[in-house]
Length: 129
Image 1 (cartoon, rainbow, N blue to C red):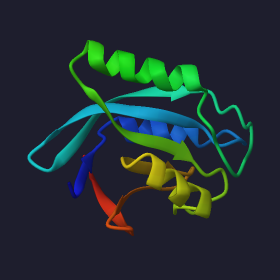
Image 2: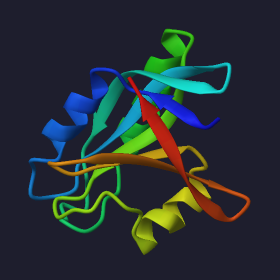
Image 3: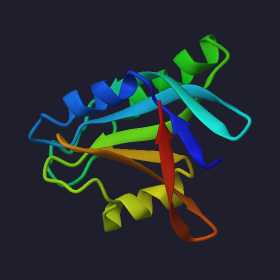
Image 4: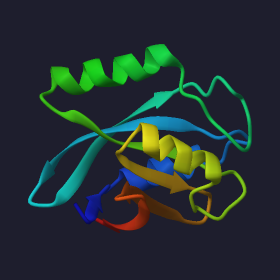
């Protein structure tokens, strides 16, 4: 899994980044031939209301999985914003990657990047259209 197809979801991520607190959501999609395809973002409330960290409302986490299952898809990634760039994993993000071994998309107003933790190494995931 070295590529992520977001399509129009890139625009949604950039809009989410306009908030002064970190925004968070779950990418719902599928994986085919090593390409993770994001079809929808299930936005979650950040119960931390912080510009430097997030914690998704637990009920929204459950709902994202229910919605994905309903459409025979899965939660393939976590998307969140860094109100002050760059879109690089923070120490808290890395801790989250250990608990949630999915693709992590980080967006700010001017750029977007994706990462995954594999074998204790943070690897950048190529975002394709």
